[in-house]
Amino acid sequence: TLRLDAACANTLRVAEFLEQDGRVKAVHYPGLSRSSYFETARKQFGDKPGAVLTLDLASKEQCFRFINGLELVRRATNLHDNRTLVIHPASTIFCEYTAEQKRDMDVRETMIRLAVGIEDSHDLIADIRKSLEGLE
Image: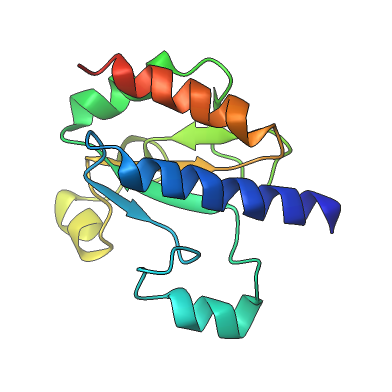
């Protein structure tokens, strides 16, 4: 329970930070009050809507630059690790699907998935901020 509490709290903090950054085109996390899934998540999961979010940047190239710029967050396809993990779903777990299938599943070339862990949220946000600044 302590791990889940920390991961969910961190995910919300990271999502709120990303929502305020102009370089981020979209943030999808059911714990954000503006999410169309917010009420459903509240009913089903209470105050623990999960530890996974997606964000969209301007291009696939920016996604790779962002991922490569991260130092604390590591690249891996796992979920629910103690450490925060990042992937580009379109070129990893969905790489064998056709462009049409990806479109039907809303898997975008501009999308990044973060599975947030239990590190200090300030450290996570600092790492993410630094990598976003590298996109300029």
